[in-house]
Length: 537
Image 1: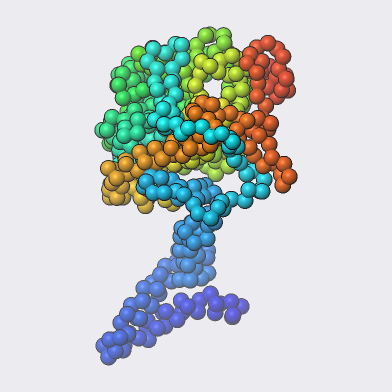
Image 2 (image 1 turned 135 degrees about the horizontal axis):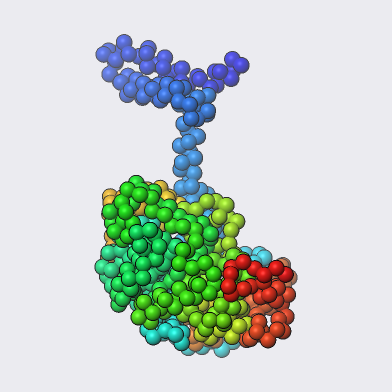
């Protein structure tokens, strides 16, 4: 017991005794002042540790117990900068971040001496190349026409765009830089569900207006959808498409709340919410409650917007629910112009750990299921598919194109381009680079003109790398890449093409009653157009 007490309180006792013992000698020995001041401050800290009731470690180890909290506070930085391996994805690896930084700064991303990847590790992926490479294509031609037969204002979108990130989650300067970069590169900038802020409009970059369950920017006083306010906003020439957010990969099925103390006047005006109240994003929409009602809402938005492309974004959950939406398309004849599939690996400012780790379907499986369902119902050629979820490189884009996507979106990739260092402090309002904060002094560090150029560079150089990969595979355009072009290692002695690994439905297979895959057959029987509830099977 005596030894235990000595180890716990010895340093605190030394500081107190040294402070008291040295006080009488301060006038005689000036060199004592710094030491006495230091031990005096530490003694006060130790007394505070003994009196506080929140932390048992500090009560048992006054002064020294604080070292634990100090080290714990800087642990992410120590790990990221000193201990983390190049390939450790937490959530993005150093190699991935370095690639984005290099391309954003227009620096060479070439690597000497060969790959650092273990090409014999299970899961290693690559593109098979051709003995007869194709001529290099111009990345400026990598565009996708979005707008089905019911759309009168189709939009030509870039193959690579900025995914949904709201003003409020990101700073004003971050929004400015992203939108100016999108304007320079002629690609779109998704507003996120926080609506269209003045900072989205400053530079005139193309916008996709995301409509979440809070209907920010077009909500009535009771929080429901307001058609008149929507029509006014949607009429802006800058708004190219409307995207209904059904769910988000990082926290599907989870609502959101911006506490009232964080609702600034700017955010309140942008979102159309009152000051002094919590800003609530419900977990579900109030404008519809069945697949048929969702499609009727899509038709309403398309009419109110003057015929602009309208679609929805979601992370796949219950498979029968999406198949129910497809059955509703067949029953009503109403089609969305596009669908964006978000993977559970997608990012967010903040979410419960259980949601980020254990809810939602990963992008590859979700995208493939959506693609197959549309193919099997003869609707794939009428609806465009986007994909989002941890996409930062040309190979990431090629991988989702090979299994059904028409284009790709990236959020965190463009955050890296404007200076994000993955400090993972997005939810604290203390972002060290001014990207994810509303602190005016912190966001002042983000110089808009410089970062906008980096956004443009990252987009341009990534598509240039994609063009080079496609040429090596003997392809002229991204639309030609297929599941037979990508390969994955299954074991130490076996590799398989994506085409061998995955089930691909034939056109109309869900309609003719000859469904070969048991899973698709069972989910199709469970799906219903009049409800998200399944039929029992």
